[in-house]
Image (cartoon, rainbow, N blue to C red; front, side, top):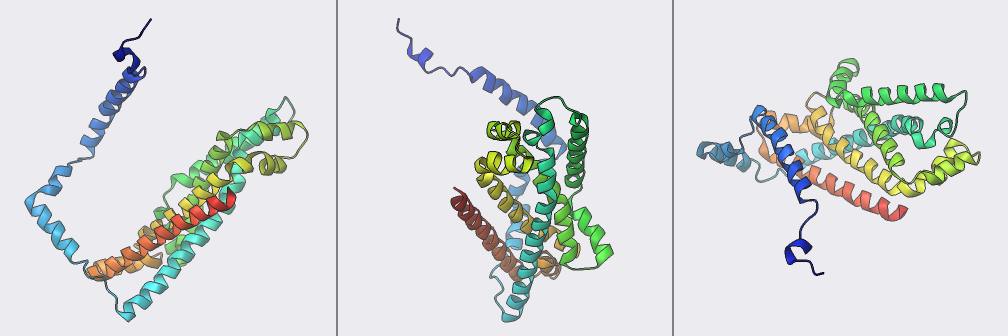
Length: 277
């Protein structure tokens, strides 16, 4: 029996995809309406003239020695802020991820006296991660700027708290999404949780964990811009000063540095993935 050409090329999931597409449209349309999303307003004659005049002020980039010295100092502050904040976030998120990862739970192997206690500790750690990542880093930066004064120290603490919650949540999800049978076999054989993590889970997830950590460092670099507007130092504070002085040349030079930092993050991520392959 020969099938027709239409039957051979028919997509068995076409109706489901169409249904999901229509459902997404039904949900997204009122959201876009509430957000007053009107991209066609950008192409209005007056708006195009305003945008063109604003962008023209960014050329050429400022390359004066005095400003480049300030730019270099602000860049080092931003790198230090992002790196120190990510390192502290790693110290916060990694242990919490270790606690909340169900694949490393010895109490889940079988009934025992510590099963209820382990469940309570794991759930408490999950709530702590939720609280840490729920408060934006800009709010923490405002708080620490008032407590510590202007400077990158406030940005470091703000990044550490918020990104610690993000790293812990995603680390736990990455560890649980891989093949957990080797870790479970080690736990059932009497191995400790740390050994099960190192030999059962990390060999399969090291690349993804490293890649996400570098991505978070890249996000920390970008977040430092926003926090700089509230006095946390770095390139963001320099950008704030340039924009207030309507100096587009300085602002474009700062943006070029940000492009270079993002490129550095990509190179670092690829190098780590090749090293861990």
